[in-house]
Length: 403
Image (cartoon, helix red, strand yellow):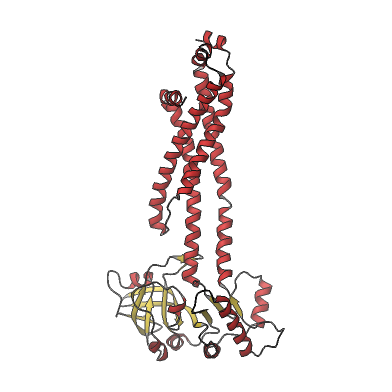
């Protein structure tokens, strides 16, 4: 049966090619959508880890963004600014169970020679941030504790800043000017990509006290924190909350006058975003397969019509209706599977081309290949069922008389 089906496909290459093209587009669309969404989810998780930190939580006046305007106004009215004295209090009572790194941030132009990088994200922080977050230092090093203590005018810069100010040059040891002050570059970050639509390659990091000399004391600090040991994040969060409540002299039952953003909250946001985007995958895949099924059904019907006399002769020679049904289904399935293989190959090539500019790894998983080809084969059977039943009902005598 497969041999006869293959001969039928080969005898009408244009018709078979049209059906195969339809299923190739459908399967290629499925592979691109599924792989793209999977790649986006992994990219979002990686970007979130770089922007927020793995097993990292943040203490701030207001840390969460998914609140209503009224809730935000209530938090701003109730919560007090986080000061450097609060961070020192946290450090004194950490007892080795929590690492803390204060962070102040603003926007400023960065210059070097006659070049300017506008609107960079300038951050003042502590040396411990390197132990809390994955900063991806490509060359040089991050801030040292001695530089933090003496407010040294040193800086670590992101890739966009380095390429704009020192094209083709090694930035290490060179001087950038921020707010009229010179800062020696001691490190550069590898390319970080973006998170939430915000580029992570526009950052400039400097000691917090050096930041305050240039921009003044911030209205409130963010404090990045994590447990030194993996798996003790909850304990570190509880200790931080208890320490801050003691610092603010809050009685039992009183609401916190600060906010904490936990790793679960950051990861759940990424997961919800991925799920919302992923909800479109099923409808797109179903619509593409339905369109392919319609095309294959029509081309198979044309094939049956053109081969009416041949089918009648085979029936007259003893072929059973079951044999005719199996042959037509085999033909439509071969077309679908061949088209599915072509669609997968095209999807792999397209995703390979897109992965470079998008900076996202987009491999088509083996499981995606298997069930995509399975969906193609199933579509071929569904598309060929009606033409097969119609071919099986052909009257041999009427068919033989047909010219």
